[in-house]
Amino acid sequence: MMPQNELRLLPWSGPDGKPCYLSTDDTSGFMSRLADNIEAVQLGTAVELLEHALEVLGDQDAYPDDLRPLLTELTRALGDVLRVATSRGHLLAVVEPHA
Image 1 (cartoon, rainbow, N blue to C red):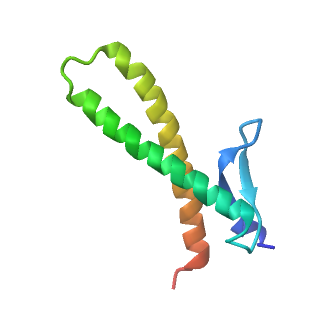
Image 2 (image 1 turned 180 degrees about the horizontal axis):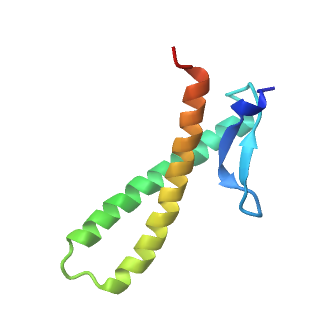
């Protein structure tokens, strides 16, 4: 098992909104692969939303009512991306310690 300071932040929250962590040395185990796959989906969704946002912002005829749902989804995606970045940044710090 990993020491407590090497827990992996998972890309989902618990039912009460608190972060979930994985403690394992097996980076190819089921939960690690599941987390990797969900992170990939989250990052892909963020790319698609960014492309859509750029289209909406470039459309002079877009209605302000179109922006609220887009901003809601962008906010959710940004939170997911930040969680992935935090998790991966922590993993990088564990795998590649500073010299």
